Amino acid sequence: MTAPLNIAPEVAAAKAQGRAIVALESTIITHGMPYPQNLETARKVEQAVRDAGAVPATIALMKGEICIGLTDERLEALAKTQDARKISRADIAACLSQGWTGATTVAATMICAALAGIHVFATGGIGGVHRGAQDTFDISADLQELAQSPVTVVAAGAKAILDLPKTLEVLETLGVPVIGYGRDELPAFWSRSSGLPAPLRMDDAGEIAAAHLMRARLGLPGGQLVANPIPVEAEIPADEITPIIEAALQDAQGISAKEVTPFLLSRIYGLTQGRSLEANIALVLNNARLAAKIAQEITLQTA
Ligand code: PSU
Image (cartoon, rainbow, N blue to C red):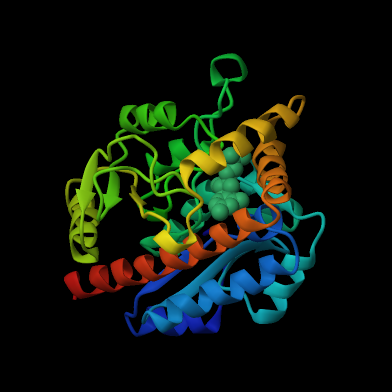
């Protein structure tokens, strides 16, 4: 028996024609942004992938199936669902066997993309090591997944609510290539600067595609993290966002596990009067465009 994949017609056609496909996640829709901006953004991100010459495949779990690509009706239904579960590696099988509606995190989207033979995935920011992890042990399953599933993930770094130096350390321990795109410094989600050097730097999509394919030839498991800085005009500089993150973290006392990231994102949205959401939307679109280029390069280099 194989995985219960439900491949949307547009994605199936792209596969048959050997066209580039970019996977997109759904937790950002259900738990990362408020309605209706979540739906508008999901549609815009899909369009950005199409405009850049690839085919989008938004991934979610519905009625016991892994949907690889959502119809607009399904996208809208998901964006309005209040009780979608946030699904990662630990609960993906239970979600499918129980028939729950599940939004896929970076980790779960990577698993599904790999099952569907999709090499590249665009998101906003990955999860990582939470601040205070020395007491809570709260480390996102996204990191471990990057070490296991062969998908190149394009993100604006890890979310700045996290402990970025520790996140970088764990990625290094897990053997995950972290590639700064066009810069020597890692971005920090809403800001272009983190103060941390990028372990690797690449300046064009073709190089990133070649490194992805080389990992496969070497038989190395896992993917790559491409850290793509938010566009200059959309960034919230680090000195402006830092005190806001600190305030949100103070308010998050008592919140734990899967609730932490959605709570902090929505608190920061409130504290910035919506500016953090505008930045988040801009960086996701930017990541979608780069992911489309990398996916096309992979297609070209394997033709
Ligand atoms: N990128 C965003 N917003 C989000 C996410 C990514 O711009 O909400 C989601 C992703 O699904 C990621 C999750 O996997 O946040 C991280 O959650 P946690 O820290 O609980 O692992």
